[in-house]
Length: 386
Image 1 (cartoon, rainbow, N blue to C red):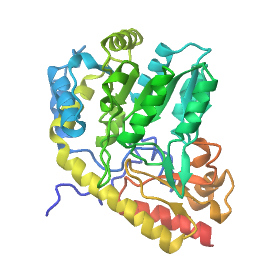
Image 2 (image 1 turned 90 degrees about the vertical axis):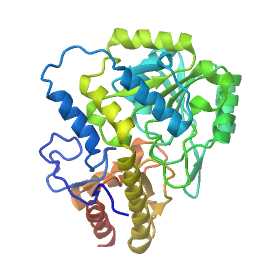
Image 3 (image 1 turned 90 degrees about the horizontal axis):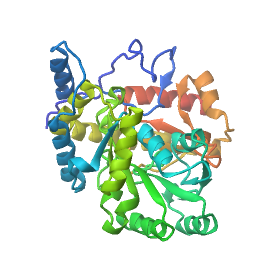
Image 4 (image 1 turned 180 degrees about the vertical axis):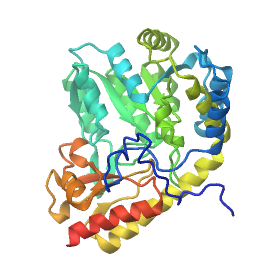
């Protein structure tokens, strides 16, 4: 079958003010979580059409935005939403920041499962909330939640008020099952813990895996759940800055919406509205082809490591486009990713930033043309086998 999109095409991003590519000076960047793929044609065209109007004044949320989100979440995740369940915000982490501020005081604590996306650790700290770490259990690269450890910590520390959850999990790539989520909620309900869940990678599923949104797990827990989502990772439009919060409990939604409006994070720019309409209404073909390509890159990475760097430990993720690779058997030290950047000219995310226990790991972004991934891997191989 002929493809509509060519993800092998290399596009020069060096002069686009890209965080990922600017000032790289010959370094292959396989780090920050954006794709090196152009977004769906329909998104570009809709933004261009709106730009042609040439007046960009204050704008209400178009009804078509609500309709697109409601349809997408129902069709893909079985989530039944109405407008009163939604609050817009400029980014998932901004929404998490506000939710923590709304639900806790400075004496309260936040519980987090490590290794985890670093802003999950840094955001509570910025709000002067203490983090309690409940590490995931790593069994030969397959991670599970330590629910026994979680309950023990909640039982012995009444200052823990909120848990942060990432699904699919960044960086380990797990897509939590309905049973895992239900078991988790049973414990959280016992101690009256609020759950803030980041589902920004929720559309980025590998074959035979499907998101179970925490929003849908069980009605009786809904008054303590806040879910963050966005099309930005899915469709590679992070620079447009649009996300939304899903809250089933109306009183909680009203509190969150009030604070979001007061601090300005719910004021989305007009091109964000156009992007979400186009992405959710017309982006499915692009997404299907992108996911097939990303999964191919995951498989390619596995074959490459087995052939050239067999001491690396890597388990193909269930979701996201981020690989989690352990270089420990090569005798690496905590700063090995910095050394790779300087000496091998390839930039990876250092595992030490995700947990003190993952200093020998690196996160590798495979959402790039195969040739770019190959160049980066070749440089890593040359460094470790020289």
